[in-house]
Image 1: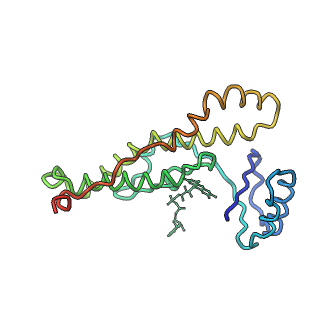
Image 2: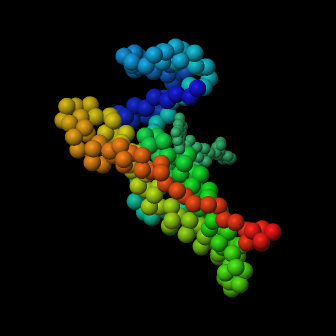
Image 3: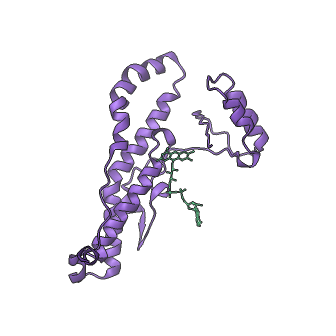
Length: 200
Ligand SMILES: Cc1cc2nc3c(=O)[nH]c(=O)nc-3n(C[C@H](O)[C@H](O)[C@H](O)COP(=O)(O)OP(=O)(O)OC[C@H]3O[C@@H](n4cnc5c(N)ncnc54)[C@H](O)[C@@H]3O)c2cc1C
């Protein structure tokens, strides 16, 4: 079993060496009023060497990522390209989508009929494929990482006025049950099929 506890406080206290025992005590203290049966038992039974505490940050990609994430014929994808806070549960899904779309772009650049007769060098076609990949991905990954952050932010509302805004405006309008599920219903399409193989 894997568990994680997320604290949305905005004070960065800096890094300090924290022992697994201190992490465990902090978790037990913070969750002492949880109404989840056996959670304390679960924490107490967790192997100490697996306990880690890290700072979680939201990265705002103001610049279009396709201009900043491609250097020559090298790029990043998945979390390295669009790290996400965990509140939508879509980070892994986006990484898989990246893999499929990247495969399609490479196929188009290297294996398609147009690429075979193209006068552009293979290296340039790869470079262009990477830029196209980021251009195609940016809209979805930008929207989802920001949506996830906003959901986490709203969940951390700690005053009556913030809870009122969250419950009556933010959740029903911006998130809503339908909107919340919508990212998971995305269809990334198929992997490319090699034209030669498809004839066999
Ligand atoms: C607790 C938790 C719950 C989650 N729940 C969900 C969920 O419900 N749904 C969902 O869609 N997503 C979820 N995610 C997010 C999901 O796990 C990540 O978005 C996804 O794993 C990202 O995949 P990735 O391949 O980009 O990166 P990673 O899975 O992080 O893979 C990167 C790999 O690179 C290796 N590596 C790093 N540096 C080097 C190096 N210098 N040399 C060689 N290798 C290196 C790492 O060891 C790692 O194996 C969750 C994440 C966490 C932590």
